[in-house]
Image (cartoon, rainbow, N blue to C red; front, side, top):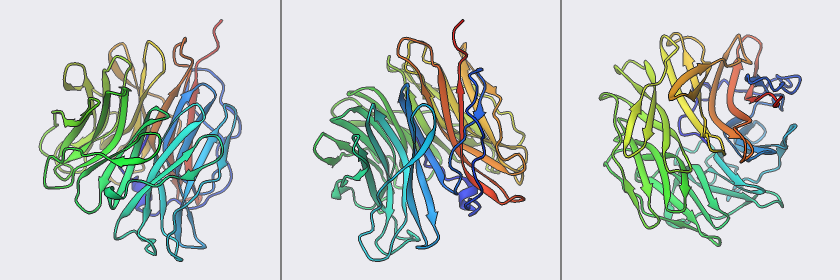
Length: 400
């Protein structure tokens, strides 16, 4: 899921259409991460979801130079190959505006994606986004109206309890408040969420174990506090979360186990010098900080976390690292096993450039340990001019 933190590569405007596929063949199932072949036409991926064994969805956007705006971008994995899916855009005026997707979730063939579209006629989105919600129930993607009461806002993540119980979270552009919308099977409704400070408070991700046990995480106080909100079936309530020091910190993603325990990941700036460190918080009876590795000298950032659909519930977390503040970004993958997070080898499809991972999805059979995982991100190599989305995949060796 997703993606509140915008890649430094995107902010610098470095992701441009590049040449063909990076990967040449499907990875072998050897328990290691491999680069997945797929379209490489300058698209940006912000989230991936896979809640069944034979498929996954990845969403983001692609820049269309002919109209000067970003267009929604969706890729589907059928268990063998990736293929782009046609996706709509919202353009209420004759001048196209940016349309971007940040979150995706689905059960079987019932898929939801969320994001934001720009003020009509304002493709620079200087006046903010309006919520963008899309649905595919097997017949293709269609736009579903968000609740007008939400106003100008961006939706960053979406979680599905059932076809008639779906939640999306994000932040308002008009009041710097966290936003939550609920789908009841017929319409989306704005649901009040505690707004803890008068500054920028936002929700970046949502996950849950049941209809009355949902967690949404993000940041509060202009990015100086971590934020967690809980839905108990009747109302959202802020729940205390620990902070690392007094500088910038945020939770970017959350994954909840079937028993209600959870992990949230993000980063914090330990001395206000842009030397970010990984942040992992664990929920048992309360949220507590769990030790996490920082393999790089300068910066280590986590943006995505997910668990497998099985009893052992292994967790993976992804992000990026830098050996120096001005150096290239490298993919970062962590795995939770035996109660400890450990760094995993992460292939870099742009060895001469930069690569950042932004989300991860674990897939597997309900009766087996997790058999695989997908990580998505973006990369660019200035020397070669190649740039675009990155998809990594791992799968376990077949049983003897």
